Length: 116
Image 1 (cartoon, rainbow, N blue to C red):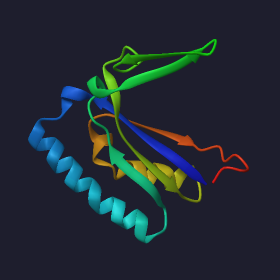
Image 2 (cartoon, rainbow, N blue to C red):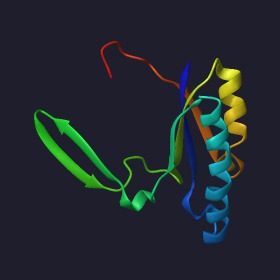
Image 3 (cartoon, one colour):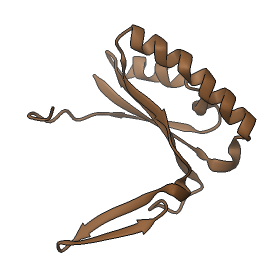
Image 4 (tube, one colour):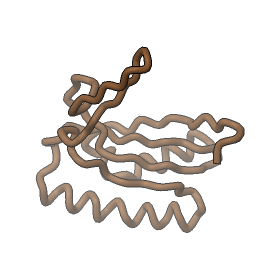
């Protein structure tokens, strides 16, 4: 089953040095998940200040800067995995450094027929 692991944290919770270490520590589990054919992708995100939000209403496109939600925790990164069940997804989330200072939201992915 495919899951997205969305990592949320406050942007100022990591010092620059700690963030570098966390990114380095995330590489090893990525290789392990890939070796077990569980990894579909992973990446950290730039700060929410670099986000753009797009919405279309009545055929009119509106673009605004920054995150849509007003919250302290922002999307910090993601993993896309393919594992047998939720328990395995939780085991993966426990190995992600971002889970130690934030929250990892585990969501099953809906697989739509006809998508590549």
